[in-house]
Length: 69
Image 1 (tube, one colour):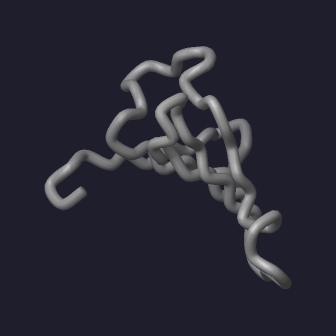
Image 2 (image 1 turned 120 degrees about the vertical axis):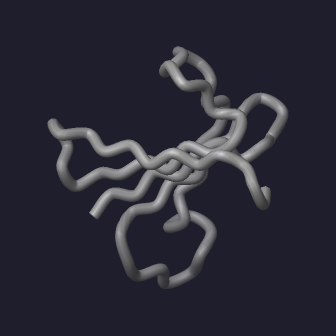
């Protein structure tokens, strides 16, 4: 991923949420682009910290990371 574009999106209506859009996430939001979301709480035993969701496209490629404080 070196040299690839990463965008950080902040939602002013949800000030506690940030979204890191990775390569493969479109410039404009598209319904259905995220085929699967995985929450770190579900895979890391005794996870302590903000809610972190990993978003994957239909090919299984990680395209975004949502962080909710």
